[in-house]
Amino acid sequence: MSTELQRARSRQMLLFLLVCVGMLLLLSRLYYWQVIQGSRLARLANAEHIQNQIINPPRGLIYDVNGRLLATNVVRDDVYIEPLQFWSDHTDSTQAQTDLSVLVMQLHTVLPDIPVEKLSADFRLELETYRIAISITPAQSAQLRKLHLSYTFLEPHPVRVYPSGTLAAQVTGYVTPDNKGVYGIEGQYNALLAGQSGNFTAETDLNGNPLTVGASFGQPPVNGANLTLTLNSDIQYVVQTALADTVKQLSAQSGTVLVVNVHTGAIVAMASVPTFDPNAYSDYAAQKGCIGTESVYLNPSLYCAYEPGSTMKAVTMAAALDQGLITPNTTVTDNGTIAFPDAAPVANWEYLAYGTETMTQILIHSANVGAAIVAHDILGADRYYPYLARFGFGQATGIDGPEQAGFYRTPAAPDWTPTDLTRQAFGQSILATPLQVAMAYEAIANGGVMMRPYLVAAITKNNSTTIIQPQAARRVIGTRVAQALTGMLIHSADEGFAHPATFPGYSIAAKTGTATTQGISTDETEASVAGFLPAYNPQFVILVKLDRPQATIYGSEAAGPLWKFIAERLVWYYHVPPDRP
Image (cartoon, rainbow, N blue to C red; front, side, top):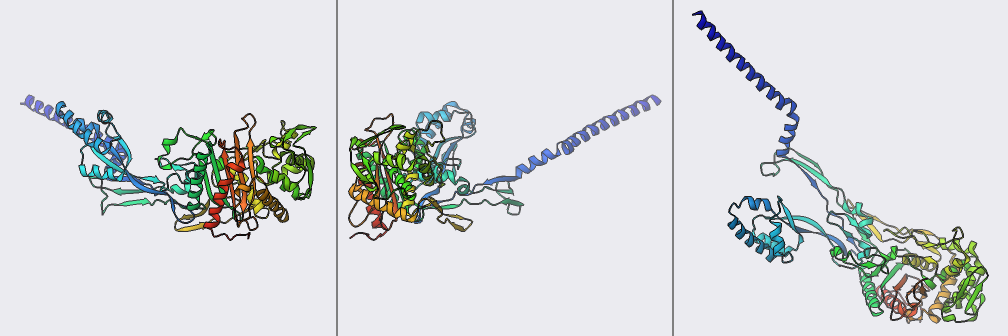
């Protein structure tokens, strides 16, 4: 009896030990999951029913000065397929191939740019989802929604659109699919235009929909700022179209035109050829601009420095006039060539000799010899180079956008010689951007005061608009000097090579440039005209530059007629009264 009792107690003890071991194991597992893994499991649980979303703000709009849209946003769909889901739902290979053929043909019908073979290959990718098309048209989106295709879905996203296509494209730049502005205003003001992303966190149901009674919190996005540019789309279109026609007619490599408001420095028009369409910017990746040396996306007005040629003679005269070293009637002897004791010889175009000529006649004749004499014998390096700096050469203008500073050698450079001085006097051995040349003439037209050029007229952010006020950069020359030089440039237009730019009823102050570059054939020139009108009451500066024109290589014949065409449209559009009978 005692033996049986002992056995019973042993079994009870064993059972008790087993229960204890089981309880210990259970407690250890509970401790593991509740304490050790508790935080991680809580995060996973929250992730199941709490959704965090990044809210991207709409990108700011870009307008012209009259409120016309230059850049806006639209919603477009990307097309995705689900390859893995398709094959997991098809165990029968024959049926799978049949269904795949039907599906691919339906997609190809709506998206004909994607070959059937590629669509079939895309469905064999071992991926959960795969994007087969980006930013399809609204009509294609409507077709796909109507078809209700299996294993296919659309994902909407905002797309930057430029309603006027190529108009002012190098001014605006473009936006990449990840909402990053590149080049132009889009790049320069990307942070303002892009705004700031927000976020939203909410409890959701099993389908991911926010619960009405659930907790939610977040930070609202800050919309991108809207920009209003100084550009006038009407004038921009006239200028850009006429420039493209002229480049084609003259078989030129490229061209640039600038129109600047004399009194404010606001850019009214800024056009270049070749250009691109920012709606399809990737199509132009291989194209070049700026005489084939830079990307077509760069703005040549700001980024493509060139030798400005005889348009620089006005700057040389300004320096001598402002220091009282000459008057418009001061004379020199011009024999067509001149040999300096410390500099290379200088010659006029085709070695034309003008004999005794005044400073005004130097501009009329566009005489290299006369300009070189003024720089070398009258001014000298000490009195010449400070005025190059005053006029803004060799330094950035401060305009909205990346720009080159240009370049010229000074006596401080180890490789400088007086030859640089004599050649810079008539626009060679110096590199300047079209904007720098235009602003030099703006300073003359504005009574000797250079305004700071600008492209953005207003910034609207958070329902508050900031108007950009014109700013004077500095006084370059005296008022009376500017008036005297204007008179000389009027004679240059009326009696000289800039005559093709003149038209009845209006006086113009202008100078031509026909620049040849060392090492390049003399029949490959930078043909230009820079000037302002009406000369007696200046309103607009116009610079026309044509690169390597073939039909005619001279600034007067190549750029003069286009300068006149643009000037006539400007005075008509802005109702500028005539200043001549």
